[in-house]
Length: 268
Image (tube, helix red, strand yellow):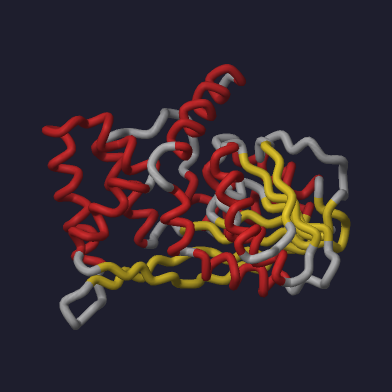
């Protein structure tokens, strides 16, 4: 795939993630970032880079550990929210707009590099893996949380993709949630430990889940926009049915277990 095509895809992605209110979704899944940062076992004063940081979940968790944190994303508005959140908790983090596929930092600059359901969405997976490893010092830690292909979010993306197909020739972001694929991507750059974890979404009903994601989550919001009012109804019904099938609640509400792969890789 040509560089021009990839740049076009990234430009479209930027608009997608800037739409809706990703910060609302990020607030729900903040515990994933806390778990991932704890798994990385940071030391106070560690130099940390959070890649595709969004509204700063991993950055804030790392700052609580006394780390020196730089949060990056290619959507500046998301970093604005990260700064607001960190300031509200009196936690010092720095922010900078940067592309996960082309990080503007020297080799081995950081003690730890994080990405929590962020870098997995960049179109060139090989380039992202190379960059995450390049900026991490030998002996340092690369830690990620990535939605799994066979979990609820993976199925949600496939459900949306049946109505609004993704760009051809791009590997699915949830491939980052496969241990085999992560090992392939990092190759001999890092020693990988991968653990499947579960996050539970909690809503009043399957319809409430679907309404929420239709309104605030960029990928589903844009899919509904592309389909229009008439075309969006089948997708809405599909997502309600998926949430219903995945619901484990027995009290009339909705609880949806969603698996993700926690990756802790030691840089060689």
